[in-house]
Length: 77
Image (cartoon, rainbow, N blue to C red):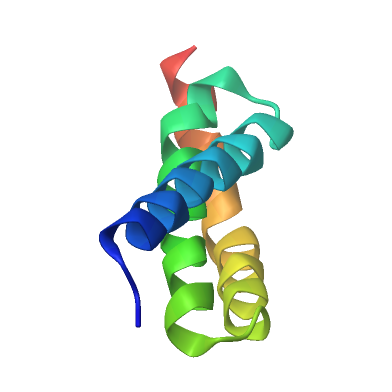
């Protein structure tokens, strides 16, 4: 049985992991985007009980969206 304290701990850990995920990607302009993705990927892991769906989602994001995202960042310069 999950308690409210357990839920709060899971949320806190998820936020810290998402922040680490964002910071490790290195670009300050992408920080909000990668932080949000870290939260989403964390939820995927919690819901699925496996890391693999989040890895596949990250791969999809990297392959299909990274070029578009970098083009937008470069256009703003």
